[in-house]
Amino acid sequence: MQTPILGEMRLRESKPAAGMGLSYACRTARAWWYSAWLRTLARFSRTTLGSFWLGLSNLLSVGVLGVVYSTVLKVPDPVHYIIYLGFGITLWGLISMSAVAGSTLFIQRRDQLVNNALPSIFYCLEEWAFQLQTFAQAFVVILVAFAFVDPGLLRNAVQFIWLPILNLSLFSFWLIVFMAVLGARFKDFAQLMPILLQLLFLVSPILYKRDGLGRLSLLADFNPFYQALAPVRNALIDGQLYLPGELLSLGLNGLGVFLAVWALQRLRYRLPFWV
Image 1 (cartoon, helix red, strand yellow):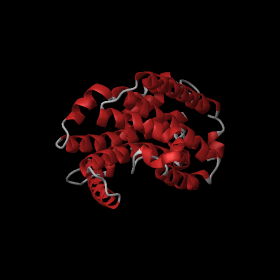
Image 2: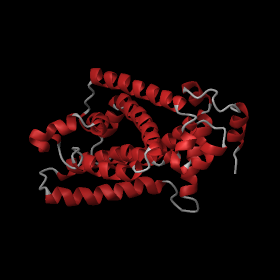
Image 3: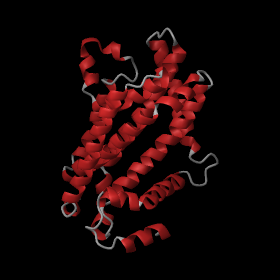
């Protein structure tokens, strides 16, 4: 069923090539954000806890994995390890789900791309909003739960995470766009992406500390997924914020967003033929 917001937007954007950049994203923010929220509501319709299941399931997974791995690895401080692991898995969830969902985005939206006048950036923005909403609900639950053990986490969250979280959010947007373009152009890419993510997860210091890589620590240094995740976790747990590095990341992510939007504009007539 077409919502009033989408109907109004389609009338306003009747020309498919018009307003396909960042200005379009700002003008239609209410539409793609609300459309993503409807997906979340539909996902948990007629359930008692609703979207709270997102945070609860993530918390239970972290608790089980934390107990198991802290025992297997003989961690001297299991509580701190569970907090370290919990934030790492939650942040990795946003990155990995953005990559996986992006790789099949245009294929799943084939009918809309072919038949509708909405520009392709709208579907990227909607998917981005959906992933951010999913992440926010899981992140808030695990942050509040861990704050009962370490109240300093809330103080660190208020003081230090805003710039790293902004960088992580921008990174997830241009990641979705580039994964969507690659997934539309190369059909095997969607099958390859989960395998690559599993390998990246194993070589990323999420289940273990960076020092555990030893001479292979360069794998973390040149792993863009880990570099997007680590500043948020460091800011939360240790209260560390390396401002020059975050400003550099902001510039790089801004460039990534610009290139992503530019690529969608250049490929707007090819995408329907690719899918």
